[in-house]
Amino acid sequence: MRLTPAEWKLMNAVWQGHPVTARGIEGRLPGGDRWAYTTIRTMLSRLVAKGALAERKEGKTSLYEPRLTPRKARLSALGALATDAFDGAFADLIHFLVKEEELPPGELQKLMSLLQDNVKKKEGKR
Image (cartoon, one colour):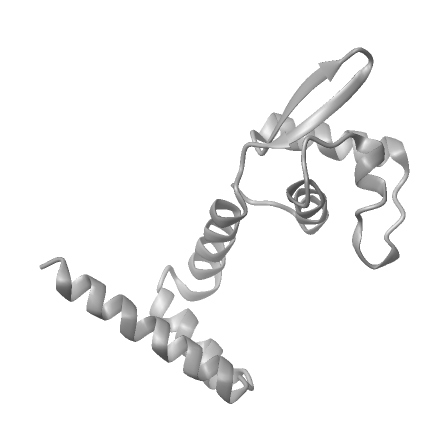
């Protein structure tokens, strides 16, 4: 499921704590973003229609909870990036990040360690 930048902001606000109302989300938006209440409601309805959120009513109030986990959202976004920009090749994506970005030494070491751990796990399953 692809999320727009605005939808990411709303999902991050919901993931902070739920269930949450549209009014509750207003105060959680990053960087001083101020959206009209009606805009938030419209965006939440779209996320419900996409299946990213569940909505339940308590009286006249709608409460929203995530149906999409942050992990699944990130995997989907990363998969879309790999597909769109690297013809589906995750290795090319990682190579690009390592080569083109100025990764701090600690981040580079962390990446190398994660890759080595992954290789060991895969070899252990054989």
